[in-house]
Amino acid sequence: MKLGVVILAAGQGTRMRSSLPKVLHRLANRPLLRHVVDTSKKLAPEQVIVVFGHGGEMVPKTFSSDGDLTWVEQQQQLGTGHAVDQALPALADVDQVLVLYGDVPLIQAETLSSLIQAAAETDLALLTVELENPTGYGRIVRSAQGRVQRIVEQKDATAEELAITEINTGFLVADKKRLINWLSRVDNHNAQKEYYLTDIVELAVADGVNVKVAQPEDATEVMGVNDRAQLAQLERHYQQHQAKILMQQGVAFLDPSRFDLRGELSVGRDVQIDINVIIEGRVELGDNVCIGANSVIRNSAVADGVQILENCVIEDATIGAESVIGPFARIRPGTRLAGRNRVGNFVEIKKSIIDEGSKINHLSYIGDAVVGKDVNIGAGTITCNYDGANKSQTIIGDNAFIGSDSQLVAPVEIGAGATIGAGSTITSDTQPEMLTLSRSRQYSVKGWKRPVKKPKK
Ligand code: UD1
Ligand code: CA
Image (cartoon, rainbow, N blue to C red; front, side):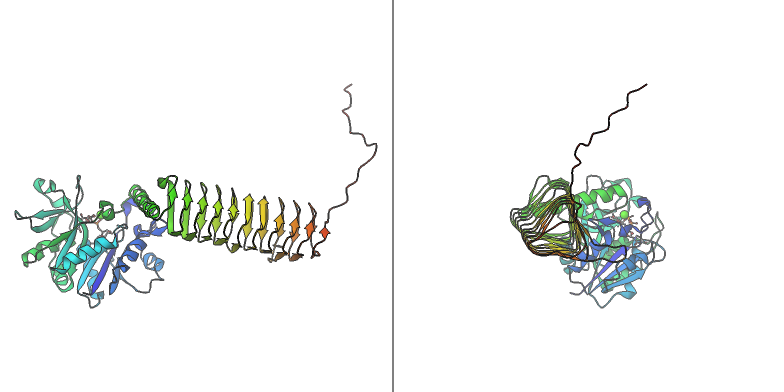
């Protein structure tokens, strides 16, 4: 059966108290709507329509790279029934329509599949849950025989109906042709003067349809975001869920509740992650990688046996096997460490290629450099890569030794096996295997006397 998806995303989200449309607020650093769109695509639908309103073009613009979405504007928010009705003219040739919500981000594809399955046997299926406290939700009214009769909204319900604990999550699947017919018959004669999508249930029952229900695996899947507290709560749920999956894949967390993944992480065996680690974008960790507390790793590949000690920030970089990084190291975009490297505290490396075995242990800035194998860069070394207008490259040959507190003024090349005396400012290429230094000669003054304090008169 061909599936069409309609995502309702027109609400303003007043309680967020934000100028950003609600569905653009972020969960795990991705817009709420992004989660819903990506989940809907797992169902291989013919078409995904997003009904937007508040925030105008801002929402479609944010998703401009998704060429396969259809956008429908709902200028006035006259209710969920009205919102779905607006999408109908844009609907392709499909058999079933699934209604999703841009502010309910954690819904799982498996749950939606079971809802679609339930609808396959009939013309309307609802996703419902039992809640201890059903306040605020539409209630599922059933007949004495247990058949679904209709949905009554909180504001329209009698005291008896308010006691019902089976609630409407809002998610439903309907036969397209029947949905079009039912929506044409929905009015707004209710407490909120809204066109309720939920009113189609009663119409379906009147048409002789046996309305089916499905349930989510976990009630958090159907939780919506109305304010910042709910958003923060869902963020925690999401992160706990991700940590659980990673633990199933063999990751050792010192505390899974203090871990954030805002993207995709692939892991080898026996990866260990200390507290407050943030992983963003696409990150790969090889076997036996250890990540110290408070480190942030973004869009990077970290090979087998690497230790990232506490408080490191690594972005768009490749860290070769058996390297030790940090504590307090910053590895910036375009850096490639070949392996067995040591990058120590307060070292910044930008857009540089560092070959195997080379060490940069303390307090250095290495930018736009190509460093050979087994090079030792002493404490406080700076590549002066920027003249105020242009960036230039520093090349350092294999086995070179750069003495502490040296400045390498780029463009410059240090020959293989060269030694640079500590405190040198190197402005032209140096010969391989030789000692080069540029500091002034040391001398001592014989008979020099340290000044003494003049006696007070
Ligand atoms: C709706 C259901 C209720 C259910 C609850 C679950 C109806 C009439 N009621 O109530 O049975 O228990 O969801 O959370 O459907 N939206 C639009 N355009 C509109 C109106 C709403 O896009 O004109 C969007 C909102 O942005 C929101 C969603 O639809 O994402 C639900 O709308 P909302 O007004 O929050 O419905 P509820 O009153 O919560
Ligand atoms: Ca709501």
